[in-house]
Length: 349
Ligand code: TXA
Ligand code: MG
Image: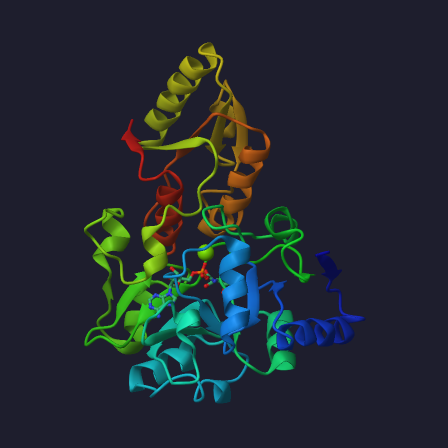
């Protein structure tokens, strides 16, 4: 199969989006940009179409997909009921980077939900994504458009790297805005629970619906016994090919420690990568140093995290050292992804 890449720029978008929608309606696969990461879309209500997503990604079939919608009216056909708390969350955060778990209706096949009786739904805050979803009409199932286990794609080029020859079309909307996946909240339990941290933080959610818990599996690291409620959180995700170690502690000590470890690895003839920030890059003496963003603005760090992991793959480094970042607010989501990429390998400087 030849994968067509279509650049979205305004002028011919309508035509391109119509063509993309046709592919989905025929049961094919189209990758599209959202404000978080690129998604790999298929008709979420057709079992055969959803199956193709698992095949293209090499994704375990017990890992459910998120249904993407463009209009509130599309929700009624896919969920059993809409709780009050969900109403308030949608009012506050949709369209936006918040995925809500509902009880599913009969219209949603178990292939889409990985066998669960619940369904994850999101309305992305991205003009082209919304235009595409409107054109398709039916809810579009879309996981991140990466090969299972690789970092999520934040640019169309990343999607092409992983999906060339496996999907019909990639809609290229340039680099995404946020860079890490949506927050997932389950409101089917008595106290709503965050299953995956993201741009919408616990504090932001609590302002709207009161007490919200965080699935203990999110923070504790993913041990076999601790079954996360979002099945996808149990897999080693977002991983670069090289071993990644996070160094935490006082920043001046972190820099010293990374320099020491990097020098040692270089002397062993290993190719070393370092994840630094605007503020710290000048202090590193060894290895391939890449700036992830600035500590003054954590958004810049989120936006470049996955791209940098892919760049290190391309540079074929053997080992990567990363500074740790603040875990406050949005930082919790950033560190959650970085720690998963590091398979929870963290040392104190
Ligand atoms: O930002 C995002 O959410 C992106 C863009 C493309 O929208 N999508 C995304 O999808 O990150 P994916 O498939 O990579 O991650 C979906 C996560 C998985 O961890 C999955 O286990 C969880 O959502 N999930 C989906 N349905 C669920 C359900 N019914 N109950 C619990 N977890 C669910
Ligand atoms: Mg994913």
